[in-house]
Length: 323
Image (cartoon, rainbow, N blue to C red; front, side, top):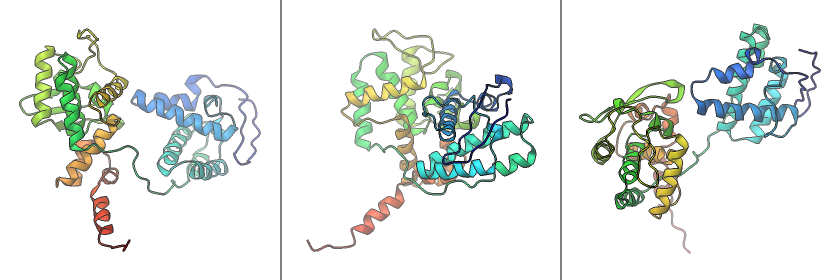
């Protein structure tokens, strides 16, 4: 690579003079090493944002593949951390720092940085702070309205969508995990689900019960599916397609059902958030909830615990303002 002059200014400016081939490009190699397309997409966005801060280019056009990541040193990464702490919420800032450290590790593995240069460059603290998780929780009345909207739909999509809602809510599945389910992953006798494609490509088990299990059973009987993808697309004429639904189609499906049930828009993650809150409120211990949800740490699960908020609300009611 041509010699590069580094200037430490706010933000740090580094100009790349040429591209590395992809099999020697640390950013490309790091992205390729990630286990899911969702992770790869998020990381590309993160690296593009970092490249924008480093070069001063627009975040939509900054070329992270052309950036000489191996030229970054502690002075640059420390400056980047300060910028991220000012510009983003802690969770987002730490996600960007994680992507930065991942690329720098590939630089070291490729022999572009010495062990000492790499160790110094990544020796930066995470951004501390606590934020309220984005999204909202659904009330039981909203869940009932959604189920009723599915029941009034006489097409196969009505039964399918009820089963999807049931698994997202009672099993706390991510939408990528939901669409990755195969018929072979389901044991209708016990309600056991073999969940794959979670974060870090980890596998776990979850259990459907009650109405969720009944809706799932009804869907399998109606669809006649015996193997392959558990949930498949249905066209406007009610014809089933022999292919797997996408994560985006789940998002669109929920938006359609919310409109039909006169329920405020919500995302698949909002059902997952509701699942965690309802489980904890009903006395399930937090370690068990974390395992069902596939959280690597109970600290993540705690962020969705609504009980402290209810305690604060009740505490506020103990004071009287004479107006």
